[in-house]
Length: 339
Image 1 (cartoon, rainbow, N blue to C red):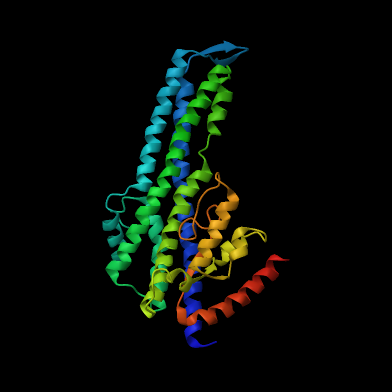
Image 2: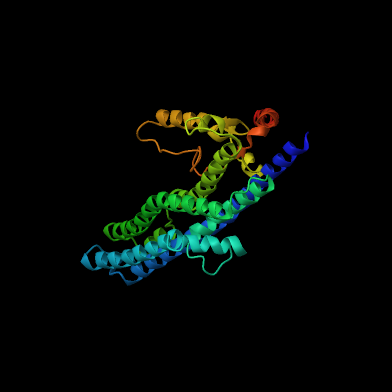
């Protein structure tokens, strides 16, 4: 294998492995954050039940319906609403994004001035993209690279906010509903407490906000880098760019293991696409999903829920060799998934 393509593939595989590690770190952070929010909600629910009016029936304390217990449910649910709102701000704080990312660029991600957990999560991934681009000699000017990451982070924060607002609302309203129904159903204190201890947040929406959207930041960065690769080598019009810029679809070794044979991610893995081809693919997916389907893009949330696939830029001069290598990987994947 010629040295140039060998170095490129080694760098690309390093990128995918690095993205896999960063995603694992982000998943742990999101799990911890979600667990803390759940604990806060459960604690408030147990405090509510402990202070509610009860009667004795069959030797057990039974919650009773009425204005006092409804007011207690409202009070504790409102405290959870405040806690959930602070949680959303903690993850999605937008002020100082540029300053925080600049600090990251200088000294890594463990910075005391990291105001937003979302920025830290997205930068773990963006940092891997920067390493890859340096290794293959596609380094953009520092300020340009920085601004690209800032813009991508701001865009995905706006998108993530919609889902995290839903988590915030569902958290306190579901707790209130649990408490009110416990009184209306005249549950024993023990049964009501057990219901509260089983309370959880919508983990799917939580993960979409805290995990999928940071992934979208690095996808935007890599898509932009792919366009720059073509523009730096040839004079090309904006209309020609989507057909000239190419990427291959890859994932970390651990994420590949989780893919199902008939899944969307497996169907595109280790294939080479132009930007135009991917745009068409996603338009078709959206058309089949219908008006109620969720809109996504290969430049942001990827092909499926909490997608693990990434779109790796291919330098134009290496396109033929990359096609050959990806055909080999694709054939091996199909053999493995066919087992």
